[in-house]
Length: 239
Image (cartoon, rainbow, N blue to C red; front, side, top):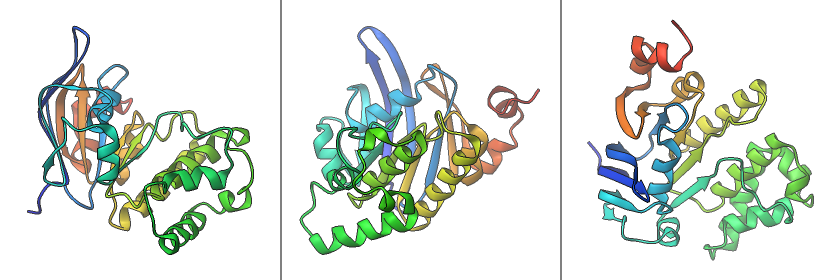
């Protein structure tokens, strides 16, 4: 078995006195796509923020690329190879598409590689090339999602963290976005997707974890979770 790329060991996290995560254990191996599922207020986004260092670990440890990172700042984690596609896109609305993409590469100093990666982003999202000089804030929700994904790819990440990529998008566009997420993962980039749409996330993931009130209640291969009766009743809308 390869060394884990990311590992959470007995992680608990708090908002003031309120425990948001309780003894969470997760592992991601290089090249995997893993999804994190659960209802509202289950702790999904808190898990992502804890991995990024936006929420402090109360107990437990977080490892990335073999190094303990929970005491490290967010900037260090990004430098080490994490990239995030945040909930609600969070692009820079008063910057052009080109400037948003360039922000993704701000830690890099290889103009040739940056140019190649820009071309790759355009191959995934031709619409971004068509709108290179358009302000990000004037684009549709789907286009902004593409831009947020493109921006993350521009850092040549080892791990992409995605927070609710389907949120607020039309079903047809959700399908397109998830096909692109799969093609990014097929390049060897490890992807961790936090998602409420369990069906579509499990259809392309290798493995999944299910959170309930801050605790992992189910985990396993995506196919097994799709066929799990408790999972189907709770998260796939079947009785």
